[in-house]
Image (cartoon, rainbow, N blue to C red; front, side, top):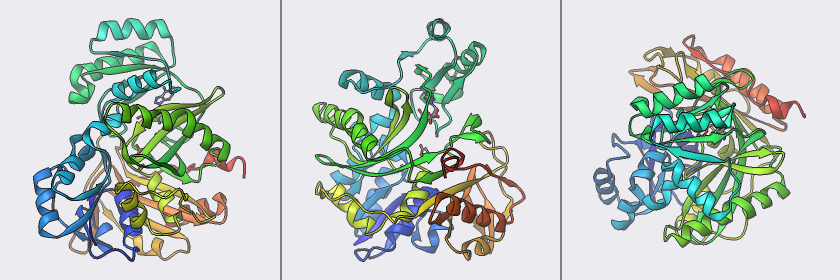
Length: 423
Ligand code: AMP
Ligand code: GLY
């Protein structure tokens, strides 16, 4: 079977590596891909959001299955367009992708279905938003309703900071994504990224990871798309998994089915494990980035077969199995990220890192210029270490980072710190 993977980040490189191992695979295409993905797939210059072009490509190249990596094409309705053309795809319909596309929609679903989450209110007007947040006190969280690549969330420590976020978002700083905003109660606890495969009727826990969203050491500074991750998340034991399925995932899936928008694909629940139990921070409708880079190398078995079963509504009750190894991923970002990253700098030494035992390098914001590899985005590379313990995974990941010669990059040196305290 020919497969088309949509996307160009580190998550898609990790997906491509796993899909490429499948005995079911004919040719793997990736659109647009990146130089790392090009090592395992044929890359094609196609915009994942150009539905007509994607559908045409599938017809011409006899694509049997499309795996959609990022949220933007899902929220815009790529799966509806593909299915209407008779092409199978992994991911939710446009109606179901609103779970990620509109935080207000997800919060409304939580309210209707009794899903534990932070108290909130939604605003389109700055004066009322500010009056509400002043009444709440700090810390308080201000978010754009729409997609903002992980950057549309401000955890404000002061009223001034929260009010500035309201002005920036409602003032057009995030375009249409900020036309409506949410002001939320601040939740305290440990964060977990929890992934569930949903085939429309069955929901199967897939894996857990912990992500580091803040740009700075010690989880400080502005939010990013994610600066590193590790898997499994030690806090997410069997009992907590069952509780999250019963209190958060199952009610949400039931609620979506009741709205005639059944959810199919990868449901990513961003959780805060509070002293009152697990609460939902947000839903995403795809694998996490960089979580996928830490999770997928641990998967035993055939990812393509599993994702196909998910898309075809025939997931088995058998949970997917993972190696007993731990994985830890460090993101290398270009200076300036999450603001304006410096582009065009040269990266050397990837081969040295890749030759180390238990090290996998995935590429994200890179491009090739003849034989040179050039930084071309905010999050540029991911270095994953695999090891018998999280400590070993961490050592291997950072040995890989040290082998890379990229003076214009930066990374956090404390990925995994919470879990490592306990090892
Ligand atoms: P989101 O894009 O909604 O996942 O938010 C990005 C990050 O902001 C989360 O991963 C949390 O670290 C933080 N965050 C979002 N909402 C809250 C909240 N209500 N309380 C505490 N932290 C939050
Ligand atoms: N790492 C968080 C996300 O993928 O949204």
